[in-house]
Image: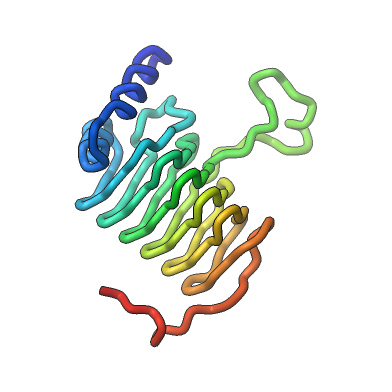
Length: 174
């Protein structure tokens, strides 16, 4: 897809007057978007493959200023909440476009990123490429997640570490 077409599509996406219309527009652009999703002014990176690498299940919320990298696939499970200014990455690249010598030590790679059902990603949190956030997991505001985050757990910090487990009797699934 040409950079010009990508730019136009992103501008149209930003100008959509409602979160529901943005979800519908993304669906029309090739993303898999479930029912009842609210997508606010989200930014996207690495759209060489369009929006085909984005899958968001039913009842999700993506807040204002969220950044989603689509170099690899990004899947967001049912009922997940991605708070304002969170970053979801799906690749690592220290500068392959300008032949950075760091690429010898840190090879560029596209990595699929998965956020499980009923997760809550706090404001300003970062989910690094290749990470898996388990179901009903909480990632605290400003935290940096890498690797696998256990389901039904609370994580916080940089790097994010498990702070506690959520007990089944304390989780009210409606």
